[in-house]
Image (cartoon, rainbow, N blue to C red; front, top):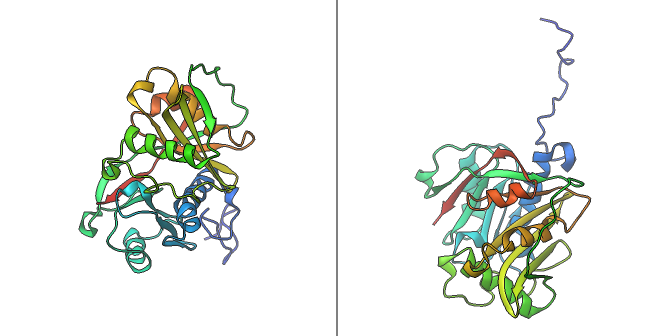
Length: 267
């Protein structure tokens, strides 16, 4: 059969997920690769277990709390193959988040529990956004003391029960911040009350670890701290995986929902 829209026989037809394609082949591909970089960056700098190949990336920062450890497929390959590779390459006795950009089969037989299908959201550069107002001081983290403030607010404000009571260094090692990762803290006087992180890779900023203590809510803390991370690289898009509680804040900042991803947890 011949048709004017059929390619020549034998021609490779790009799917958008070949390892040699540019990261910006699509916005979703950029988001996948940027999140895959986030999954390994902190573990690699801290000399903790990590793995990265053309199929998946993952890093193990700690042994408590899945948010410390991310696994993310980089291609739409069989999910069970990725899980088997994770068990081979990384410690098997720690929790992790399995963040899939694609729908997955039921992974409960592999010891995982479904956390949900949160939306991937994106903010595009040069988007007009209403001015933000807050009485809090937003400060980029530059000292070990400020990094400890950011970590403590995340553990207690997110909250992360697995990491409570808070112990410095369980989540943020001294090497956490580098050229591709930055953090912010909002202060009410001397008291840290909100935090966020920006990780920049493949021409896109991943906004993560947004949290606020109860006393900061209703004061513009969530929006202001998210905006600091969002605009860290003004000419590049920013992306995040939204929680139900965070979506209204992100929408006010002109983030748009692109699609839903799937998140599983290995307890």
